[in-house]
Image (cartoon, rainbow, N blue to C red):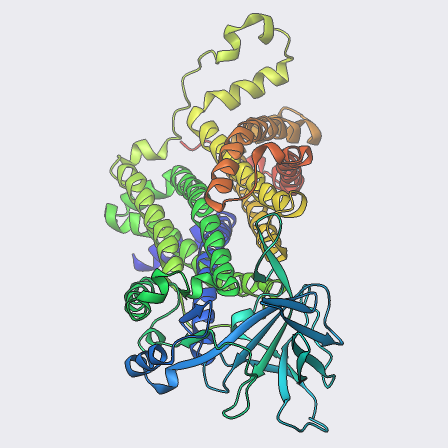
Length: 632
């Protein structure tokens, strides 16, 4: 008995290997995409958090219009510790000069000083906001109390960078009095506060009300007994030890951040009330907040599209398993006559669904890990990336894989339970075909009479099995909508001047996975339809139909069903695009190029055509003898 059962189990897997592969591919693509997007956002968050801790980034910057009161700085040190508070200063010089008022003028001269804004930080050489050195040159000939060895922010798309080893002169003139200080950049660095590769704003508003972009950044260390006296120490950097125990931008960090901000504001309440000081968090830092914003946009894409990906996969997996059970009616009857219980028989098909889903999930895990890494690396276009976090983020994978698995098992159990409780004599007979009725088009004679016989036959077959037709149409419709959404995001990044190179990479990934899902959906459903039609195909062959006539009989149905799904997928895709644009905060349906609306259905049609070519051999290899054998 056990040997017979195992033999039927092995034969079932061998006979339905194509369906097993289809389930594996469906799960791999949809779960791989869903989990990959989710993992990518968490990896971005954890990578930034690890970097934040290693560089000891300041959680708060207290910025004043004038020098910060030393008494207030001391209170901060009492609360957070001596090494957690550092005092510094910042000024911005535009076009090489800064009017300080009352006849005082500050000038910055030297190679690298342009017409834009140069920000100069003056700070102690502490452990807060540790910068990473990119390049350095030895100091030569530096001496004198007015000489300062400095660092310059590395050059990128917006920042010009200072030539290393070349002196820059900072001078203050007040009428006839002039004081000059020599600043020599000897190293190029990446500060954690300026990890963005472009669009780093200054503190200076332009004529349009927007903040102007920085052109250069200098870091001038201020040592005890050696300072530039006319520059106010108007900033305090605070790294809160408690906040370093949590990860950036997660709920525990945000709650602690608000609590500590209130404490600091209490210390500086008089200055803040007079609008001479402000307590800034990392949310006011462009690099950190924009990085966090991109993470949120990717997560939004994931939430919207994952729902559609999983729904399409659920639909196709359900269709695959229920129709497999229909084909196995004879096998189920045979096992019943051998004395197997319904539960034992059903376990065979539950195992099939379980194996297909689990194998797909295993592949999806590795695909999602790779996808998360690819998405992360894409952001090298936008940021000097921190090291990729080793933190494992299985939640998205577990949820999406568990959802597919539960649905496949439930559908198999429900459909199989009803079938295994039927009498063997009933199951041994082929399921009675649907009662012949006029399809809806036959009720429109002016249209119906214009069709030739072969098209009438095709339309009857398509519309006769409404459930099969509806499931195929819905699956193709949803997958086409996903392709349109992927093209829409790509179009927004490329041609609507929205987003960045990193977002462009994400859009390409969305499009690739949507196209893969679309292709697998069309292949799976078409392959199932052909498997169910073997007797019809064999009959046509016996009647002497040529190869092209036999394949045309199937192809017409494929093209009609796919065309209906594709046409309905366009309005559904438009709604999906609207939703995607809404949650992401960029893009517009009205600005989408005409080619986007054309490419989405065209891609689906190409996939349909390729599937038809791939399955041609299977159609023509139909065994007439086996297919037409009388089951009785």
